[in-house]
Length: 480
Image 1 (cartoon, one colour):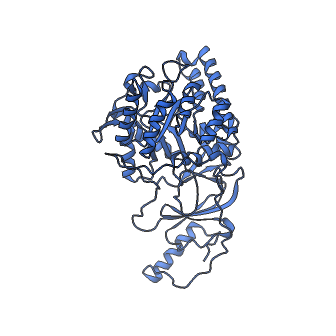
Image 2 (cartoon, one colour):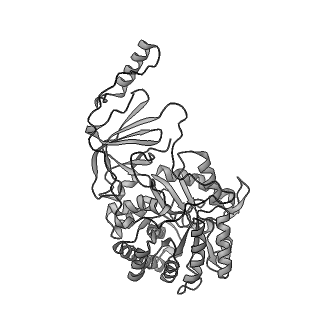
Image 3 (cartoon, one colour):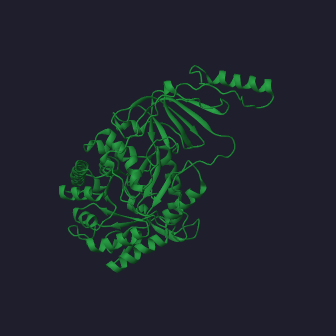
């Protein structure tokens, strides 16, 4: 029997109590109940060509000593079935520029049982144990994907210094960041570089993010995000502070270091292609290609930090799966990325955060001529994103929190920055949801679909009209 829309929680509780007193036991009425006309299912549209799927690769096999995160997150019931009916919300999932009004979603044990128009709901089953949530005035948004993050670092104006903090401090920071992520609507995070040290929890000497990933996956806590993690940045000597990265001096050392990252349990390899010489990539396309071939043979991806054009060209020609930052792309390189299916992971909000430091710190880097240089870099980076979008490059949104100056709960800032660079709001939202999921190779990441995990959150307002709405998180379904 369909639920009376006017049923209040108080009347529901009174009715349940009366039934219990009369029967003295829970019973299920065997009489079939008529269903309200269900109406058409809210279909999941096909992704736009801008969010083209990643190249096919064999599934990643477990690496020695690692506990891989589950491919598809599901909730394991621990007792009575958990059921929630979200009623009369709007749906904004990045697949369309149009908000879909009057949508109800039934969640059972962490999975979406059905998505229906609110005036055509199916029977949600027994009223006992059903929580009805009035979602009116709010929008459903898929759990977002932060495609560029650094879990073990806090960010801020001294972000590089914080990478040299003790392993114990880094692990504490990661635990804090995990909860910041989920409370802000981020369900998945792709960690693309962490300091190496002896993990105080498991005693292993490797990138600290790997132990964090494994423990969170084993815990089953839905209040923590799902993680895909690279190991430690692989750099040519002299590129970054020596104690922060794994430094190598030639192509053979580079390949060997990449293999060790995967042996340690990394999901992907991160190459740092901004070298000591600003005008020259530290590695050639052929040297990058050797690493890519090895990683793909092991079912792993390779991504490249490439803020400069020289590094981005070598990385794309070498066959990497993604370019991180890509602040200096040109039209030819964007076209090549589109042909190859190479992702661009944007981090535009980093420059916007630096501009705020000109007012909130005394650091000369962010004042006067420094601020002017930052504005110039931001303008060039926005042009790169616009070129990539027009060429059809799949764009995934990242904050660079920790490894950059942003914080873990600020992915909405990057969505705003993408709109400022020329993307439509729905395209920017797609970059923070389904395209990020495509980069991860996770079909359920960044989407809302029947039968999939109930990984969505609700915001006050329409994120397809303004990305600022993503800051107004009202409720997160998975964070129980």
